[in-house]
Image 1: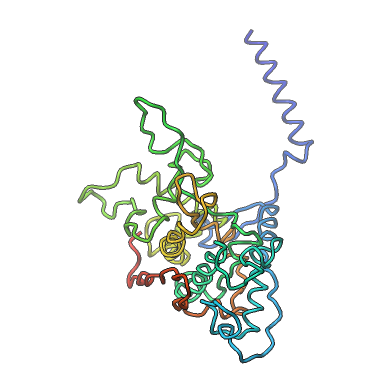
Image 2 (image 1 turned 90 degrees about the vertical axis):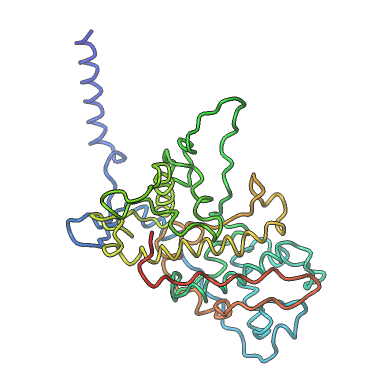
Length: 371
């Protein structure tokens, strides 16, 4: 019997070897490596050429609309119920509305947000949401310019990509249905959630770290800062949640750990790449967006737009980045639409109260962030 299995194993190995050398699909795909640290320290991003080309093609910014004709009359004077963009010219307003249609609802057209019988009507929830999203875009481009988005900026297309509902949104995961009786506690692991790369890590780390802006500033950090413990540390379960978040960020940006961290001292800020500081602010920006702009819209969205637990759709790293380290391959999208980078102002008073203005952004830390 032993001889039989030996012969069978040898035959299988032989045919696999023939297939490996004779079939193109068994070849290792061509790789492209981008070095971002000292040679020989594994500070590099590695991906296949095919994947790199595919993700680049999926993140091409649309061409901006032709500049608006000069004009003096303001949109707030020309049209009724213009609450956010009332101080730009009518021509600029019309140009932006046409661009927003292409960015968000190219198939549905203007009627996705507007009642064509009365364009000033606010009966459609999409119009109320769009108004708040305009303020959110202005807030990101003005408040978070130096901390995260830089001069490239964001527009509606950065998230929507020609769809009324962005592809990369998330809701709180209710988890599997629990049976009655005693249920073992598994810390939310082994659920193969896409948000953690199908790993055996807690499936709902996004709610833990991204849902609101009131999250503990040290929630993500689990590494000790001293050689020996001086106080009660964090349990291993917290470390697993942090790993889940890191996997999400890695996949969302299409990079590996060394994009932000040094291979020899992962936790040391002084040896980390500049991108780690940018990512630190990005985490706070996501919390700011979800807490001040998305969560207050819970009652505005209809039930079919809410999650299983009745929560509003929220953003994460992938919402804007879509698999690349710089959204839309780093294209500057805001220079052609300066009205989307204007400081946020309170919406003009109408028959319906406008959504509350966002709270001030968290101050930039003077020293290296704690996590």
